[in-house]
Amino acid sequence: MSEQIKEGTSTEVGDVGLPEDLARADLYGLIARFFHQPPDQELLDQIAASIPDGEEAKPEDAPLAKVWHSVVEVAKHNPATSWREEFDRNFISVGRPNVILNGSFYMAGHLNEKPLVEIRRALEVYGLESAEEVTETEDHLSALCEVMRYLIAGDDVEVSNLTNQRTFFNDHIRPWYDELCNAIEDIADMHLYHPVAALTREFLAIEGQSFDMI
Image (cartoon, rainbow, N blue to C red; front, side, top):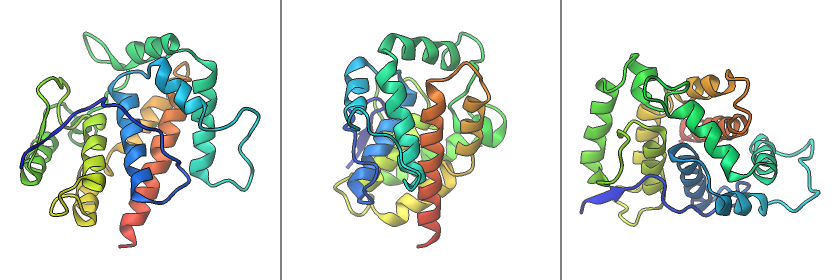
């Protein structure tokens, strides 16, 4: 049965300290949301509430927990209007934006290249397709994270299983996510998305290490 993968769907903020698949799926969904469109105030408030006021990252905290604390801090102290301004200034442009969020650019040097064709083939095998209202191509980071969320939490075990997660991640996300995070962190005044990039890098690095152990 064909399923639609929608970017920017509502996201619950899971406990990033939990190893369970639900927490992984939630975090993929949150990263997809951040890069599909800027967070609204409701999402920022939800993120801010995930750690009580006054609780700081401890030296013994895991790296993922530390970067999550950083995301919580910028969510607490910056309103949705600031996030939208930074998002539009860097990810949206009538020409080339400051940061491109499409895998083809990093893997092939141009948009709409062979990596996009290969992603579409993989989605066809999985019986997935983009929702009609989605304007970004399937190699956009948000779309790829939504696919991973489905491969983790979907009901069809013939599609949503660890083998497909590992293959899709290694083929379509792992080769370029680090370069994307570097591009974000290289822009000095992009201070809201620096912690988001750090969270993305750390989480996807953990994913890669876990898949290597299979």
